[in-house]
Image (cartoon, rainbow, N blue to C red):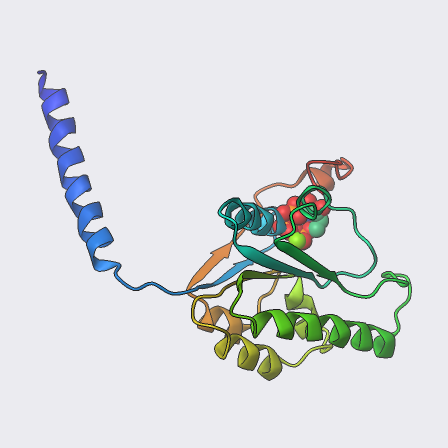
Length: 199
Ligand code: ATP
Ligand code: MG
């Protein structure tokens, strides 16, 4: 074996023992709170990826989309065929064009009621609250209401929160926080959002 190979082997052995130690230290088993935030692309995609993962093992999953209007979404099209997936979308009938605070708040509360039901159901393994950060930012939803529901959810349930500018109380509470950072986005070079790629 060359010197370089020997050094590589030693480094790998060290790395393996460090990883093994970490694995041995992680003994707790419970549901998690994950926050995918930041202004780079990939937050909702990562959430749907995890939904697919959970459904793959036959777990029940609830997805609540706090979006205005019926945005197209390829993952939803495909995954709703799974009887273990329930999707709730904020009431339709208006878009960003109608800036009606009262109607928006009402629609938000209606879909939040669905979220609360899922967050209280021990049979639901994973709950996604997609774009909920904006509801808090716009004041449609109260942070204390959300943190209370998250805190009292079943111990085995995992929750994923997506959206830019996540409230500090949410990131403080979360087990895993990932900040997607925009390095470049095609949209800023005038390229249209692409079907099956961006939505
Ligand atoms: P995605 O749904 O692709 O995972 P996201 O959830 O991280 O994106 P959102 O802020 O929810 O990002 O974006 C909604 C839409 O805008 C998506 O179609 C997404 O591809 C696109 N998008 C995401 N990031 C950016 C960006 N930095 N500039 C422009 N468009 C973006
Ligand atoms: Mg998103």
